[in-house]
Image (tube, rainbow, N blue to C red; front, side, top):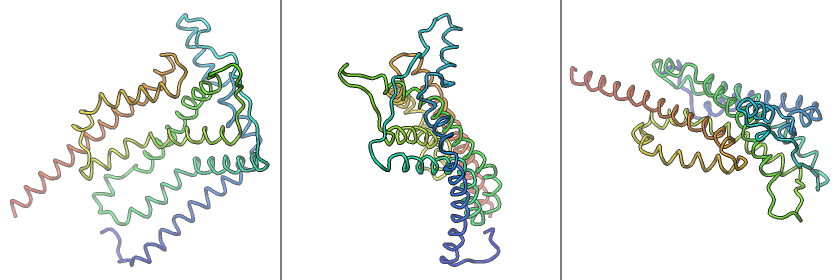
Length: 278
């Protein structure tokens, strides 16, 4: 083991506690700053995807014009109205949004603290192979957050705000419902983009093989198309914008699994050769 001294179970718990405390401190500090600037954050970040002037809608509109589709892909207005039906609604949503922003911005440091706790328990060879793990995990998480915020959220907000089963019904959303929906979409995308990391560890411990992923590739395509159809307006272009990154993420996971699986087989062969010569 890498650690020069043996630690008891309670010592490990104490060490883990300090790592978690430092990470929580950073998250809370960011949360306090976000709470102070809550009005600007809600205006320019939280409610931005509900505006027809949001950068994603403008980009899609410009792309449609460049493809000679006219204004077919442009969003002129989003019939969107938010209400707060509880006395504590706005205050609690300010706390929630501040915590979410603190968690998102503090996530790389949280991963770093967890890694510092795990690293001493690894062998030198395992440490070398795990270099860059914090960077990769943080990058994929922030990439997923960006995908959720700039792609999934505006498409979903547009679809749900314009969806109607009767002209008698008006869409007036509670702030709790809106914020929780945005948080779920953004964090869900962040978690989804951890798929290559999950596949890496599952392949490492032998629960998944690249052959298994390739076998169920067609099933994954169907699932991705269903997800894209649910969270986007009913047009093929919007569904493609969602489906392509998700499919590329799945293919990248297959690539990661293949690399890990080949390395694992190579190590097993080297171990067998080493045992046969001793």
